Image 1 (tube, rainbow, N blue to C red):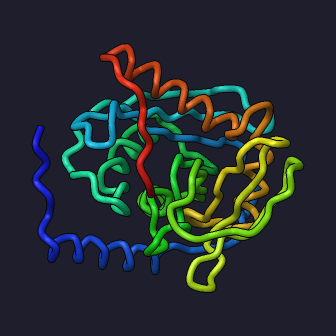
Image 2 (image 1 turned 90 degrees about the vertical axis):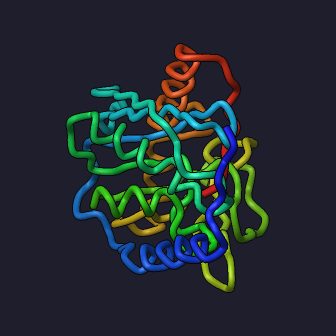
Length: 233
């Protein structure tokens, strides 16, 4: 399928909307520890695929036992444009989360929150739309740099762009590549790091995120072959 790219003026309008969204994001402490933690992940055969599969998994805390899961597959109509991933994937993410039929206390999104050129990655889009505490947990950097990171689990280094701390590189397992944690909505960066580590067990990703990633892959493979290629926030 040939993508019809928005005009430069329309892209500028989407950038303006993201800047407006960034101003709507609130960073504040959680009112209580989360009891239901939901993670969401999207699988696509390739970056410009016209269909995608989103999986949401709800886990009870502290057991991290799965209490609900939902898969949503649908058309992706927004073209691939770096930095505008949310407009492609957030609708599927929201549909998958809402399909769980419960209200999450905390949402983990596979992607960036504040660690985005306009401080409004997909985790911010999802968090503001749901009005729930949300964390972006990304596998790679979209913008910014960080200094040396210790090899031990729990080691962190601030991710900085334009002299502003926009997220944190977090070592979730000894000697394993870090993940990049940032605020999506209604949580502080310190708590975002804390809950990323609290929900990470034997693997690099938090357990709810790992389960959502696996479910999205399996569901997508059941409907057709393809290898996942991640985009940016």
